[in-house]
Each structure stands twice: as structure tokens, then as C-alpha cells.
Length: 245
Length: 324
Ligand SMILES: Cc1cc2nc3c(=O)[nH]c(=O)nc-3n(C[C@H](O)[C@H](O)[C@H](O)COP(=O)(O)OP(=O)(O)OC[C@H]3O[C@@H](n4cnc5c(N)ncnc54)[C@H](O)[C@@H]3O)c2cc1C
Image 1 (cartoon, protein in one colour):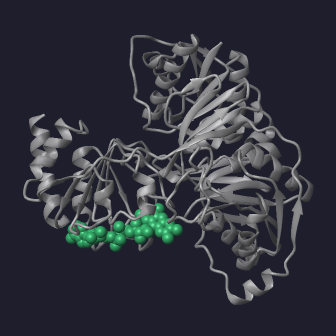
Image 2: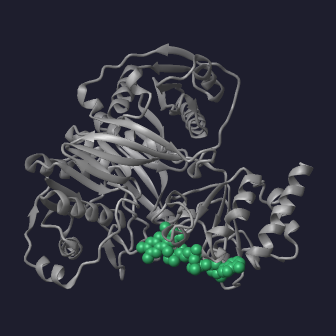
């Protein structure tokens, strides 16, 4: 069984987010980049399924050469090989289109992504990939099992869960719960260095959207402290001042 | 021309997020001098469909088909796309719920339309079409510019107020065509978290963290939530150790929410937690450590023992409720 896992790199979760003075870009100076946490979950589940069913796990990334350290980390965690599409990832459609072009050529049984990247939080790559490839897609999946040519997934819905059955091949966006991310061990790190990492150039594709300006959310005013012996005051303020109850 | 809205329903009933999306579409249509058409997929009563007029929809396209009573992302996207073409709509509004997320990207690809994945406001400009959304899990904001002919707005639930007016929508039945691949995935079963308010839709959320010491102490959290008509949530470690179910975990690696009012009880306020809740309009932090970072992000704070403060709060809310 051939697994393809789409990964992207994002600022470490503890990063204090700032933008360049002209507000046109994220200020990456001094920022440590990690594999998007949801992509790590997808990767781990793919590895578990490969161990159970046999096959290969390929990771794919749309990004500049600066992402290679994180691609190597994915190889250290256990992926067999990697593909980097040499382009900046600025628009979900662009990313999905580039990946679909490669995926169509190579033919995969299972394509996985994270449910969203924690930088742009769009969550569109899994669904767009599904549509571009003419495959079913399950976004925000908390469980994935494969039995023959059928997969059973659980996806989040508002106020519950839904069990979905899908034919292979399909695309799934991983949410927490699907697997516990693995940490690379020494052997993994050693072998990762020699695993194949192929770089391919992007194909022509329109950008349908882009980010023009970035901003920080307005700073909250000072917190109003209320005496713990006067909780009635809180209820009063929530009603009269905040108009929240 | 019209602004098209996908009016999502669940088990035949519309949700608040659907009314928000119609209200949003109505305001957009007013600005561009167009009308609002809603697409309803599945088994909804005529009466409920007509009532969408109260939120501003003039017309409803009703798609009924036995295979469409549960979500099939590909088939839903086909139906919505054909409705967009039929109405010659240039703007499509889809509430960015879990289901909305599953179809919006597919519609975008079919129409080669730019998508604002998680809009939180009306466009700041319609030419170029520019809408603000959150990024970096709420730690930043960005203006997304869409350059395509058709534009899709994925509207974040709880970010636009429901408006009502007088009106009734004209219901028209609509039969889009489907192909086999539209049904390659099927819903087998749904498991509802019964009787509870969906976290992503709740206007008030009562959340608690490790400060509560153990799952047996959640009774007061649930009681406060019930009194306020609120949903319950928790911090990550609380879900990780199994004190609370995973679907209650909010934050950078959990659910992102933006209710009107968020109570953080015994939660320290780590940056990853704040990322998921910082867009709450009003935040109340209850913590016994006056240095807890949550006090920097909160609107109101009480520095005290949760086991004393929360029961008092419950009593005060009861008094308030009986007086109002
Ligand atoms: C990659 C990554 C992703 C993460 N994602 C998330 C996420 O999505 N969501 C999330 O929540 N966390 C996330 N975290 C974890 C986060 O860093 C914190 O560890 C976590 O939020 C702390 O949870 P807590 O506030 O419940 O517990 P603690 O940090 O242990 O805080 C407990 C608080 O309760 C207070 N307290 C104790 N007793 C009482 C009492 N009797 N009365 C009142 N207050 C009391 C304490 O003063 C303290 O402030 C993530 C971490 C990493 C590394």
C-alpha cells in the first residue's frame, strides 16, 4: 500500500508572532520551524498502517530549501522517501494543485494531510486535493482504519462524531486522536540522512487568493480584578458592562 | 445575479451558524445590490425553508435526494456548484463549520474560485475583494485578497450577528446532476454528544483546567454551564489524561473558539491555550495564582480558590437568573 503524507513547516507553537514593519509578511527572524503538529499525526498514522499492512510512506512538501531540515525529520520519524516541490506555499489552491500533479503521476492508495496548518488555519488542502484528484476526502478525521480496499474513518461534526466509510484511494485530514506523534530515535536520525529526497519544480498554476496585510489582534485592556468575596460584582459587570449575560 | 448561501442543516433543522451566514450574505447583497439565494440540501420542511426569508433570503433552491440526507462532501459540492452556475452568483457564502469546511474547498476547485477560509468580518473592500481572517491560530490577523471571478466566503461561526426582518422565501425545487464518484464515501453512523451545546457554536463557554485537580470536580463546571446555557471546554492536559473528552480540548492543537463569554477556571493561560480562545469577546479568569498569565488576557479576573469562587458564582448566577 502506498501512502503519501503532505507536510508543511510552521512556527513552533510557543512563538510570539510578529510581522515585518510594512505588515506584508510574517517576521521569521529567530523563529524555529517545526513540522505542523497535525501533519505529524497524519505521518504517524500512515507509519502505523504501513507497519500493519506493508507498503511505503512518502512525505511531500511544497516549500523552499529551508524546509529540508523538517523533511529530514519526517524521514527520521520513519517515512521511506520524500519529495519537495520547490515553490513558496502561499495559497491553499496552489499547494493542493502542485501536490495533485505529482500524486496523479505516482499513484497512491492513501493520501493524508493534517486537518489544517497552524499558520494559516485554512484547512483546505485535504478537500481541494480530493477534488483535484477526483477522490473522496474526509477532513478533520480523528480515526482511520483500513480493511482491504475500504477505509473506515471518524470525522468531527458540530456536536459529535460521524463514522464514514470510503473506498480507496482517498484523502484524509488528520485531527488529534488519530495517533500519538512519534519522536525520532537515533537510528532513525542516522538512516534519514541517506533516504531519497527528490526535488521537483512546480508546474504553472494560478493563485486564486493571497494575503495582503498582516496585523496583530488589538491588545486587550487591563484585566479588572474582582474581590473573591464579592462574586456578585462579577455577575453585575457581566450583565451591565460587558453585556455578555 | 445573486449572492448564494449554502444553508446547512443537521437532521433537517437549520443551525444558528446558518442564520449567521444568511444574515452576512444579506448585508453583502445589500452592498452589491443583489438578491440572496439559499441552497438547502436534504430533508427540510417547506415551512422551515420559507422561514429563511426572515434572515434575508429571497429564494431557496431545495435539493432533495435520499442519498443526500447525510453529508457527502463531493455530492454537496456538485450541487452547490451547479446552483452557483444556475444563479450566476459571484459570491458564495458557506458557514465554516466542520461540514462547511468539507465542501468549501471542493466548490472552490470546481469553480476556480478563491476561498477565504475562516472570514471573521464583512469585506473591507469589494474591489479588490478583501476580507479579514485570523491566522497563526488567533495570534495574528490577515487581509485575504481574492482575485478570481467567483469568490467564496467561508464564514467563521459566531463571528457575525443574526439579523431578522419580515419576509418569506420562495422555495423552488432544484435537481442537480451527480456522478458515481460523488458517492465514493458514505456516512455510516453519527454519534451525537447528546443534549449538549456544540462548542463551536456556543455563545458562552465554561472551561476548566488542571487546577480542578480531578474529573470528580467537574460537577460545578457543568452546573455553571447549564445555568448559563453554555458549552463546557477544557485545557489540553485535562483531555490528555482523560478527565474530559478530547472534543472539549480548546487551544492551538484543539478547537479554536470565539464565544461572547469565556470562563477559564484553574487554567494557567499558556500561549497555546490562549491561541484557541483569544478571540472570545469577554474572558473571565478564575485562578488562585495572581501571577497566572491568563489574567493578562482576561477582561475580568478573580484571584481565588476555584472551589470557593465557583460555587459562589453559581449562587449569584441563580439569583441573577431569577431576577431577569
Ligand atoms: C505543541 C503544544 C501544543 C499545545 N496545545 C495546547 C492546546 O491546544 N490547548 C491547551 O490548553 N494547551 C496546549 N498546550 C499545553 C500548554 O502549554 C499548557 O501546558 C496547558 O495549557 C496547561 O493546562 P492548564 O492550564 O490546565 O494546567 P496548568 O498549567 O497546570 O495550570 C493549572 C492552573 O490552575 C491554577 N490552580 C490550581 N489550583 C487552583 C485552585 N484551587 N483554584 C484556582 N486555580 C487553581 C494554577 O494556578 C494554574 O494556573 C500545548 C503545548 C504544546 C507544547
